[in-house]
Image 1 (cartoon, rainbow, N blue to C red):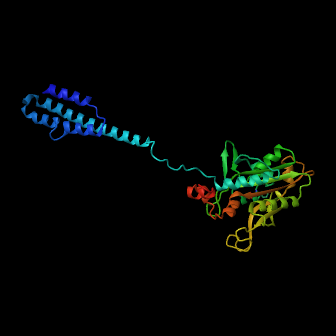
Image 2: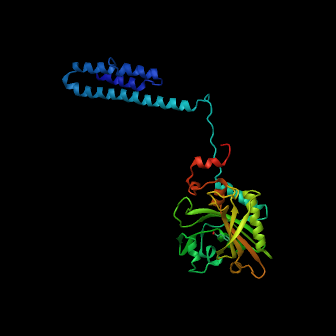
Length: 340
Ligand code: PHE
């Protein structure tokens, strides 16, 4: 009896189980209701009492072995068919989905391109800045309330207190320190302010700031440059108007409105029925800033301006919730690239 069981064990181990039919035959032959294992158990009755324990245990082992073989063979067969499916070269191909450019990146490129056409270069700088480049060199005296206007994120970096830059004017300081006029540059980049996130404000956004320094640069040059920008960006009919304002680093300073391109300046809910939309801040670079950056303010003058890319994109694409730009919802993002 014991020999018979051992022989069966070898047999079960050696059987090849490679097809669903083979599996089913194996199951019926060994584990079915009239199968070998069942009939062995029936023979247990005739085994002498003193051998029953040993023989019974062997039979149990045999049954487990047969069940395990059946189970693993089943699993192997299932994964093989799955892989076979993946490799089915006759199946038709599915459409490839491609990415789209982010609307802010589209507008950023457009702004850069149209300033490059009139001779501006692009400069970049660090997002983590020291006090000098973000504030002091720009004529923000220590303890001056103007520093509070730009709710700053301060961070510690080693011994030094640093800040996340609140504007890319910091890049312009770096350019003025490291080059000599004439300077004509724009600085695009991400900036940070400690604001509660809502449809109209975010703790980070993007700017493009511009700087032009040479002999005899005047306010008229500034105005003409901004009019050129408005017409290129919003269409030939675009008009601008300048309102007096205050920035520590420019004197005189102005805020610039563009005629509302959504309603053709007739008045709508986006321009709050005024026909005008605010798009940027600007002014003549304060002589204190030039001197702080090593440029002789008796020889040179310059203008500077700064705009938010989100604001321009908002007017161009009529997006009225700032949060959409950083949520990365594919349904939103793919609307700005036609044909995908
Ligand atoms: N740096 C200003 C801001 O972030 C914008 C600005 C730039 C204003 C240059 C005037 C001149 O609000």
